[in-house]
Image (cartoon, rainbow, N blue to C red; front, side, top):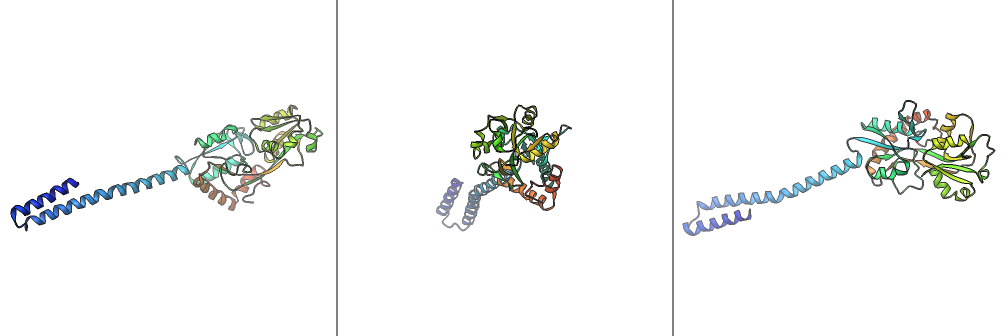
Length: 301
């Protein structure tokens, strides 16, 4: 473009030299120069416009990625953690947390995918993008800085369950006993943390991949006590009869939240806004009633 302007300018000078008076040629030269300048100006502006548009597209894509890909909300959960997430007698995944997730998706027009995960691999599943969040009796306490959290929706406690005829009535009675606990659970964190001195008195601390297996061992006498979330304990005892009791002394107290990838505040905010609406209109309480969790919820009471 600059070469074109230079040629035009040269032509103008040549016309002036040979014709003496450039009255007829000058307007043409000026028009050509003006047109060339306009083209040059247009060329200079275009890249800026393109860069702005590209930046807007990137920002838009980033926002979209932070929310949902293909409008699909994938919940990572432990499929053997009733009443929060489990497989029912019809082979369908259900539970308190999954019903909450279903309602959130319905209100937002999202497609819900219920993705069972190995609890030990939950962080890898989340960081890889395989799941949108971890929503399954997920304890906030001690993990505050590891995830972007919703506000708490359940007040939970860790307790010990024993056979009703075991003779165990206090934590002191657990000395020398075989005690079960789930891997990477809040109960295990307590026994390895603030309650490490108590755990040191046990005859053995056995870690299980899920609480269903642990309860079967408790029934069989392979372990004599089980450290477990109180909501899960109540559900398991109700399902298995009156052969078990919960010790009065709590191992620890905590709160459940929905865990999102650190920094994914856009998706957290969208889910939180819907949960707030569900609390106000009584939906959370209504779903909690189905699972005998009304006394535990801290939203929508």
